[in-house]
Image 1 (tube, one colour):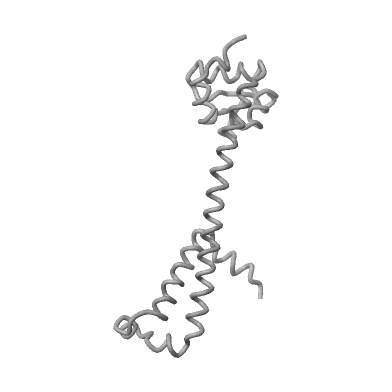
Image 2: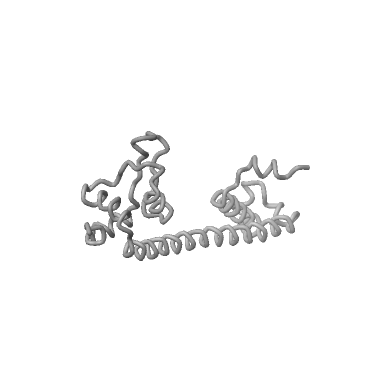
Length: 170
């Protein structure tokens, strides 16, 4: 049996797997520890005593699944925050050491108060600013002669707006 097809069909992301595990934890806990007044009308009063290992095993496994998926989600959030912090920190350091060509491009963003410029793909200076993650190509639709739209990243816009001397003319 090919289990990968089943997993692909379920398409369980971390969030969905977490929610599924929570539901199984709650259902297993109800069957194992719920009062008879609640279990009787649901028709699962005997399940907890007759098949005790199965609800117990599902409780343990889904509890572990909940813990693991929760830690994965928390780890991805922390990694994202750290990555953004390092991007801004290193980006600000890079903005302190701009080449004259980079200053010209970034100056047009700040002085024209526009977050978008049309830059050609064969512009090496623009490509360097993209690789340094200061600007980004905002659309794949453009013109071979006029260029493609490039936006300045919000953190760079804020920093350069507060420190326009970094892009001032030489």
